Image 1 (cartoon, rainbow over the protein chains, first blue to last red):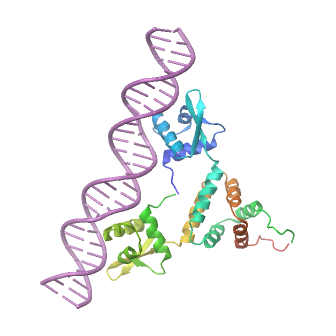
Image 2: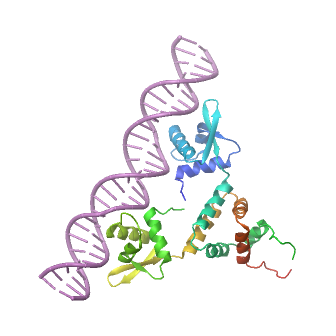
Image 3: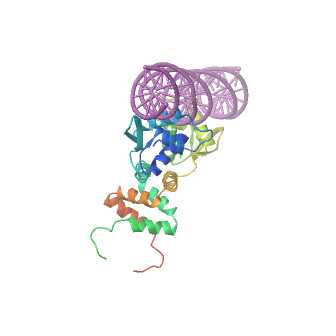
Amino acid sequence: MRRFGELEQQIMDTAWAADRPLTVRQMLQCVDRDPPPAYTTVMTVMDNLHRKGFLVRCRQGRAWSYRPAESRADHDARLMAEVLGSSADPAATLLRFVGRMSPEELNRLRALMPEPPGGGR
Amino acid sequence: MRRFGELEQQIMDTAWAADRPLTVRQMLQCVDRDPPPAYTTVMTVMDNLHRKGFLVRCRQGRAWSYRPAESRADHDARLMAEVLGSSADPAATLLRFVGRMSPEELNRLRALMPEPPGGGR
DNA sequence: CTCAACTACTAAGCACGATAGTAGTCGATG
DNA sequence: CATCGACTACTATCGTGCTTAGTAGTTGAG
């Protein structure tokens, strides 16, 4: 499981929140940091994220335009599944995970789960 | 969310799997790496893990003896909850997470969940 | 006393993220 | 055509954290 650096995380957050692919210039305008990073800083980090497979890119004129390789929900769900998958005792981990949830969250989880096979009760 | 380095992960795995606190010497004998790390390497990493709060220690003679600060299941559940908590859309994330589960895993999850309040159906 | 086992302290190398400049290309505009 | 803004590929550097492990000193058993 890999951790994003600060700027990487900001860039991914911004890319996930955008409704279309973003060029480096557009990303630079969205990323709110003090001091503002150089154009080439943002460019390098986006290129790195592309190389690592988190962003995909296509041409927009002669600029690269980047969008996330997977949705944020997919990404986060995958992280969660990786944690659970590497756990020595998934049942105990799930029990603890569920035990951290509020009743509302539990209800939401319950509503999300497909009905068990073998129908009616 | 922090990532363990390789040796850190091995040490945590070993500490979690042990049924009692381990001294550096004992940990060195359990950690299977090629080439085997120096005693002081293991000692330093365990000290770092202690400083970071992942291991707690007590005296065993004049040696420090280390055990995990939380169970593995708690640790993993916390990681999962942190991922979910930082997610922009927890419901979508949960949906995707549940969607990755096999029917058996779903049954297990279902069995783990407390009954909804307002009983009988 | 000797020696094994421990500690605290220190130092160095490597990987990675962040940072950003340079040189060159390209396309629009005057 | 020249200029200039915008882009790219390439390169370099610094800080952080992990890994690595040696050194000097302490301690306790034999």
